[in-house]
Length: 90
Image (cartoon, rainbow, N blue to C red):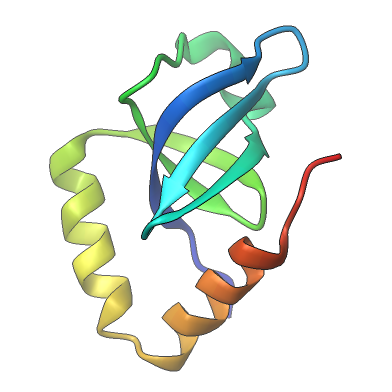
């Protein structure tokens, strides 16, 4: 199953290349935010992340509800966190 998990933008690493550092459950990774290039992402914004790519911008309330729900999914949540943890944009 493919899930999107909420992450908070903690740094815009390379605006030209659309790369941002995002914190997902305490794990920080540089991900592609190219799909959200027109959304004007800034530090503090929340995004829905799937394997190294920000899929959509969400608000903090939606991030918390989504995080609560995916954590209840057990193994699927763990698998998504593992996939995020092992992803790396080079």
